[in-house]
Length: 347
Ligand code: NAD
Image (cartoon, rainbow, N blue to C red; front, side):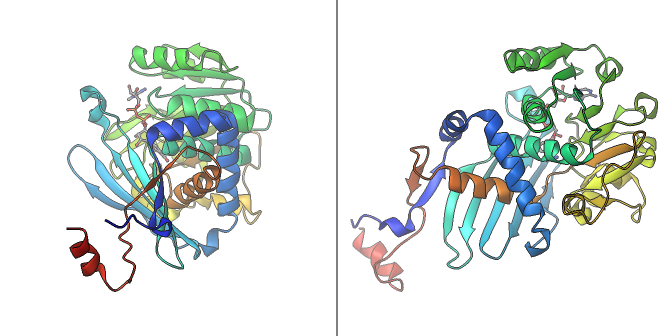
């Protein structure tokens, strides 16, 4: 059998290689670099093909495809969200993704994206907070201490200079796990017994809980003036975390309105309720935080451009490293029109 020529091999980054890559570069540096990569792409926002993600819902969860292209590269992510998975030892969110060259249509990277999604979501949250949170913020309440939580805390330390995190989860075992994982991170970690306690003295509040329903993780009376809320758990139709009254008191910032109106906290509001697109804040076209008493809310759902940025970052980062294998996943006959002959010769 003829060995495949190298031009058709596709670099594949496994979970094990992604972990090696992150340790090789350094977790905080990866988060800082990813935030910069995303910001760079948000500054080119108008260049990208944009569409709300393609979602397939079931009673227990959702499976989604998230495509985008900047004209030179095309990327997509496959991602699921199944809140009940953890009860059977499976994760709520898993993902993989692909980057392709638009000129040929050939894939140039296939990678695990479960870890990469946690990294890019954390980088995106911290990037939004860099533009919206009160200056000099030191303390974050982290409500929901599951798979995403330590990534969020670390990104806010690396990108925004947070030095204290106050943790709360309805499951004390999750808080214990999060606190143990963050020991030695340089963050002061304060486990709390309620959401209210976690929010004491916090200038930034991150909600990252998983429940396939309209939940009220934060009620209106819990949220004082001047804070920044980073709401990432409400990211599906029928799934929110904040009481509607908080939204009415907040200035709301979103990734891509057509997707966020379907999936985000703002699905609770009228369709024409004003929101600001984050890329416009980053490019100076719109205002971010304008006052000390203003409540800013990043209604995060996760958008395809963030995954594109993460894919492109990994594509560059693996060059010259051993942290990938070459996959024989594209048929590559010597005569491009002789696909059948290639099959016959392999018998
Ligand atoms: P996870 O299941 O690992 O953790 C969720 C945690 O929330 C659990 O520990 C659970 O006990 C806790 N929780 C549930 N209800 C709570 C409540 N009322 N108060 C306090 N804690 C509560 O899930 P994960 O992977 O950390 O993801 C969390 C959420 O973030 C999911 O809904 C996921 O879809 C979403 N997410 C969003 C983005 C984005 O870009 N916006 C990206 C990744 C994940």
